[in-house]
Image (cartoon, rainbow, N blue to C red; front, top):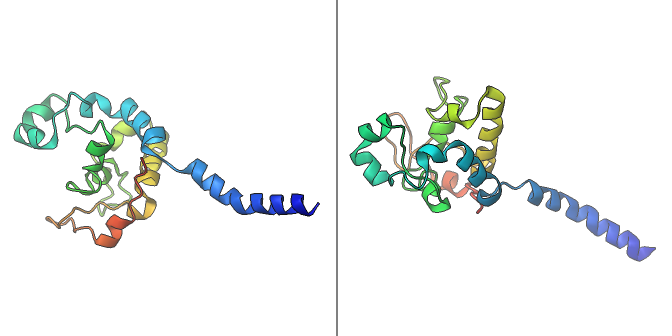
Length: 158
């Protein structure tokens, strides 16, 4: 009986950890499939890398092509560094902005407000709720620079 009680107690102590691990958002399990469904048509393997995109931005935008983000490494580029916060600024629903306007890519997260909010929440959980900041690496215009503490809160599990 004592062994069963100890096993049960160990299970109770581990249960929150098991639940948290099951709910943990990862690139492989949630982000990549969401990206492939919602973003890859414009930001997939055929899209240009950011430097090439910037050189011919008008042409690419006119043809509904954005910078390449089809791998974990390419996507992280637009979250952590060097284009810090770009994903957050573009996917945000406007609740993190002064003017309340959603980012220019928010509309592509879903077919309706409910689906967009659900998918945005997946991205936020992956980045980290405390790390979902619309800041840049260095301040530019009215967008402040991210702090080391804010960057360190990013989860971004593979």
